Length: 201
Image (cartoon, rainbow, N blue to C red):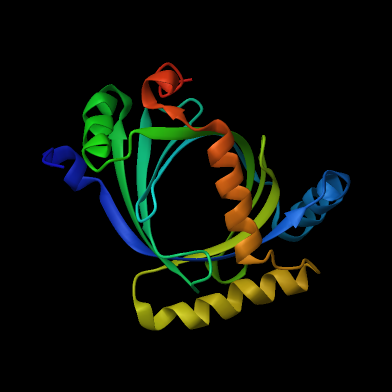
C-alpha cells in the first residue's frame, strides 16, 4: 500500500498462541476464575471480516466505538508454533482503498464474525482472551507476540503452561482449522454484501 499514513501504522511480529474450546456451560465459571486470578478484564465488542484463498489470508477487525480498524495478514498454519503477523492500522474512511488492495490479491469474498472478548493480562506479559465468537464457538486463547524467531519456542512453552495451569485442554489445530473453514464457507459472500457492516459501530 502506498499511503504514507498506513506505512507509519504498520507493525509485525510472530503470533504465538494456544487455544481451548470452552463450553457455554463452563463459560461463567472460567470467566470468574480468570477475574480472580488476573483482575477485571477489558471487554471488547468487535467485527471481523475474513478473506481467504488457498494460500492467502487477511482479516479486517473493527472495534466498537473506534473509527480506526486493523488489517491483519498472517503467514503460516495453525499447526505452526507461531505465525508471522503483519498489522496495518487505518481509518475507516480509507476502507475503499484497503478493500481495493485486498481485491487486487484475488480476495474478493469474505465472511463475517461478531465477537465479544474479555481480555486479561496474564503472566509473563501474556494476553488471555476469552471470546464468544457468534456462529463459531467460545474460546480461551493465551497469546504472546514476539519479534524474533529465536523467541518462539520459549513463548510457546509459556502459553502452553498457562493453559495447563488453568486445567484447559489445547484445541487440536486441525479441528480449529476445520471449524474456521466451515464457518467461512457458510458465511462467505461478496465484499459488497458486507459493506455496510465494514464501518464504525
